[in-house]
Amino acid sequence: MDWTSAQLRSLVELTRRGTITAVAEALGYTPGGVSQQITALEKATGMQLLRRVGRRVELTDAGMTLALHAERILTTEAEAVEALERTRNEVSGTLRVGLFATAAAEILPPALRQVRETHPGVTVRSRDMDVDEVYDAVAGGSVDLALGLDYPDVPIPRDPSLRVRELSRERFSLAVPTGAMSGRSGRSGRSDQSGGSGQSGRSGQPGGSGRQKVSLADTRDLGWILPSVGSYYGRAVLTACRRAGFEPQVLHEVTDTAATLALVEAGVGVSVVTDLMLRLRPSCLDVLDLRETMERHIVVVYRSFAEHRPTVAALVDVLRTSAGRRPPGGRQQSGNTLLTR
Image (tube, rainbow, N blue to C red; front, side):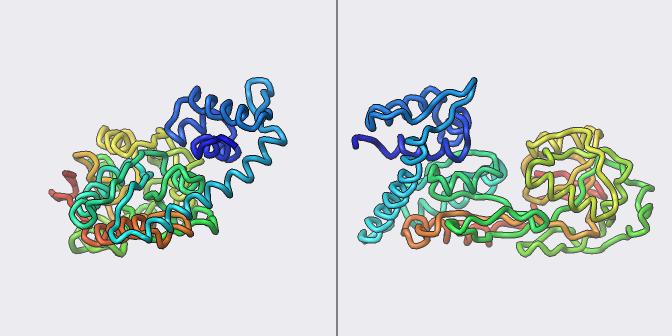
């Protein structure tokens, strides 16, 4: 059959995502481009692979059959690429990397500098994507590996075809408008003061800071700024608040971290933050230590069979080294108000 890997990948992604638009977003094409790929497959096979049902499309029996085999073909192709790479005397090749906004700003740049120095033959092409979609993107082969997030309270389901390696842990603090918690701590009966620097290390263990230490329950009558509860992040925060005995009042549903910090600074609500998140936008707000332990894990995800692919192994090693060197803080403190830089 005269078909291409890109055409087969479009078909496979359609079985995963259900719509032409979603496939286009996942693969970086236009919806028209995806339709052209499927049309070309139909010409190559001489069979109808899709049919329209109202405004939607669905795969025919022939389309489902080809999609099943296409996934195997793409896996075999990727394994062949890995085997060819192992025959080289040097690590070289192109890697497609998926990542979320915070990783694009803080994690990938130093890693790329190190890759240029230690593996000049490796070319990295990155794509920004929704953090909850990076696992599917790796499983579907639209990227070779990805940086993602995992939450102990709401762990992302593990696909046996994927490897998930932890790079670092971050402990959440509470971001509130300047002075918003003055005179409020202790309402839950659990607030106190802590001592030390307040910065969280790579292991996610808090340092102490002399900053006010509060419980999530102290915010029960304050408005919150959170992502959708349909996201893993939103569900993780909701789970932690419910464990603390209250339902957060979500006034603003926001995904972007910089926008969240801006809203907190404007005095319209509170949110949880990590040191890495705080570095995304210079802000003037109060950051308070939480009595509850609430963490997120920064992870790198890649397909199991690619574990020994030289380029993948090299970038994973660089990311782990870079995460180990990344400073845990990056904030300047003046009283309770933190100026992020």
